[in-house]
Structure formats: structure tokens, C-alpha cells
Image (cartoon, rainbow, N blue to C red; front, side, top):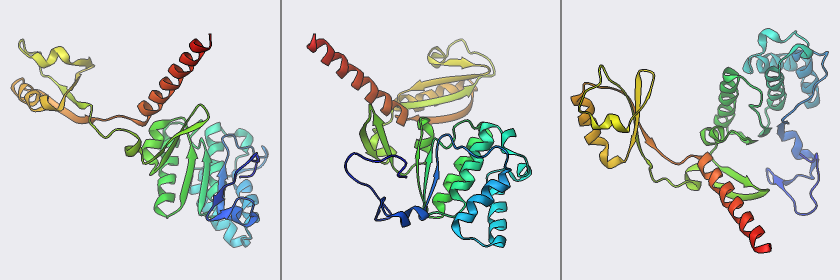
Length: 260
């Protein structure tokens, strides 16, 4: 975004150097903590940004109304931003980032401060941008979001890029086993599977190797259990990240010991 400058090296977006000012018209950007003038309304803020892109008054009006509806602020468009929650301000920021229909959208922690409904809406917008053929680059500490949304991820640990690729490529595809969620009408006296299960409310959860899956089904059927779900357990992006962090800590500890 050229808000800070590199000491060396360079970067290209859409085949052009970031030093080429013209490329920035094709980029939408949302910082982690956007700042807007408090006494403007959401409609006024978006109309202000729309003027940067040479839209006519009619086009601006239609585009702004469409963006407010897309980010769920249509009913709050005439309220001054000083009365908005952090999550609502985040939605205004997202709207201004995509207002001019950029080819590349750069989002810094786009779901920061959002409630569950807001997070769902932002995820849907990102997926919609993806379906439209736009490139979305976003940073996040919520690794489940990256795993859910990204075709390609880069993992940075200790300031170094430690892995780049599809989530499935970075993590081992090999299954860790199976998880069965089930309910029992009553607890049978002879039910070995129950000893391995953890209970939450009315449901039991058991994890076991794939080879034991069908034997478990037979036991559940004989006990009259109701199976709610069967899920394959696979490594997550969070586990991959934590393994890198632990490896870095171990290496740092070894260097410290050898230094002493």
C-alpha cells in the first residue's frame, strides 16, 4: 500500500510495480483500525470515497446504497459514525474498500471486533468477491477463517515466512481418526465404547482409529444409540502453526543453552 517503504526488494500487483501510482486505483484496502470523521454518517463517508473514483452523482448514489445494503448498514446509514460500534465501523471500512469494485482487495484483520453475525456477513462478502473473480488478500490471527476461506495461505512465524501453499498442502492430509457424536436412550451395562467417550449434556463424543469405526457402529446399533454425526479428524492450520511456534521455541532454547 506504500504506507511504509521497504529497505530493499520490491513488490508487484497485477503485474505492475507498487511504485506505479496507476495500479492503486485497482486496489481496495481496509486497515485493521480504520479511522473516519466521527460526525459524518455512513452514507456521507461512502459518498466521499466514491468521489475519488470519478463516479457521477447518480452512479455514486446507486453504488453507495448498494454497498450499505451489502454490509448490513442500510438501516443505520443516517446515523453519525461516533454512535457506531467497532463492528459497525469495520463494516463501513469494508464497504469503502470494495466501493469502486477493485480487482485486488487487501484486508487487515477484516473480522476484528465483529459479533458472530457480522463475521458471517464478512465471510460471505469475501466469498462473493472470490466468485466474482477478484483477488482477496487478508491477514488474520483466526486461523480457522484462513482455512475456511483461502485457496492459498502463507504462514509467518517469528517474522519469517514458514510455509506457502494450499491449506491441504501445508498440513498432512493423513487422517487422525474418526469422531462419533451420539446419544443413548439409557446406559447399557456392557458397552465398551462408553468407557472411551466423553459426555456433554445428553450427547457422547468418542474418538477412535478408522479401523475401529465399523465395530463402533455395531456397538452403537446394539445399544439403540442415535448417531448425530461422524467426522474425520484431520490436522488443522492452527495445529500446523503451533507446531512451527513450538519448534522455534525449542530451537531458541537450544541456542541459549549452547551460548551459555
